[in-house]
Image (cartoon, rainbow, N blue to C red):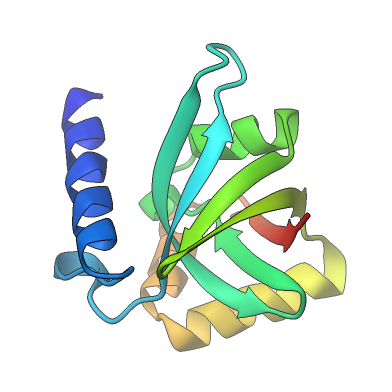
Length: 138
């Protein structure tokens, strides 16, 4: 856990120092920072996440690099939908909702076309459907 937290901390620092741009595995990818509230701890949690601009907000993806379980942030935003997202130099209060049906399919297929790594994550995830979460400004 400490390694993941340290890795995230470094990405967040780089993101903020470079107006939302980072190198390494996220180079060239639209990246955001999700602020959510830990469902158990009640503490603020920060997660750097790829995003896709969608009508009325942004979509983020619970890929967890293709793990067979959902990421912790997903459970946080389904427990408390009031979140904040940093995109570039903007910080926006938003409300999270899980996309379903045709909306989810459209957004997910676009993400896989734009960033083929997400198709790999889908294969690794096995039977788990990777959640697509839409964040709408509030």
